[in-house]
Structure formats: structure tokens, C-alpha cells
Amino acid sequence: MNEEFENEELEESELIELIDEEGKVINFKLLDVTEYKGVKYTLLLAAEPNEEIAEDEVVIFRLNEKNETLEPVESEDLLQEIFDFYQQEAEGADGEEN
Image 1 (cartoon, rainbow, N blue to C red):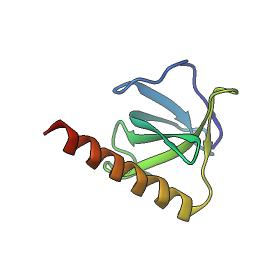
Image 2: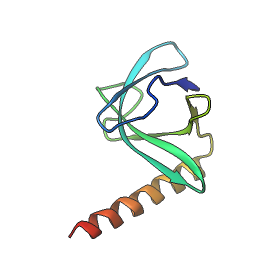
Image 3: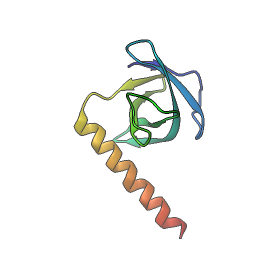
């Protein structure tokens, strides 16, 4: 899924419309944008119940700012690394607030 997005800056709670391989529109909520090893990634959650994506499943895309597209991440290992990194960063930020 190589998806175009129209917003120059993604903000939390924004809805992002992506089209799957079958041409179905799937709405996502932006969870966050994180930078891992010098590359920006979007972390998305399904905005509505969906057969393909669980309600609490995080979907990760590489953010190509130059072409204004979201690009799929093919490697399961890389997806896990990005998600683990995001969780560590989020936990660190929560700890700083206390």
C-alpha cells in the first residue's frame, strides 16, 4: 500500500483515508509520528471496526515527506523494532511527566 496523504502536517486525532489493494477505503486515526534510525514512521489505529485490522492493532508506514506518501514497511522485524522503540519512547515521556 503506497498511499498519498494530503496534509502537510499530520496531527493527532486526524483521520487519514487509505485505500487497500482491493480499492476499499479504510479510515485511520494518527497515533503518532516517530523517527527511528533517521527515518520517520507513522503509527496508525483503525478509526472504525474493520475485518482486516483489529481495533487495537497499530499499523506502521514509512513517511515519505518529499513525495507526501505513506509507504509500507515489508519487514516484520523492522515493524517490531519500530513499535518497540515507540513504546520505549512513550514510556520515557510518561516517566518525565511525573
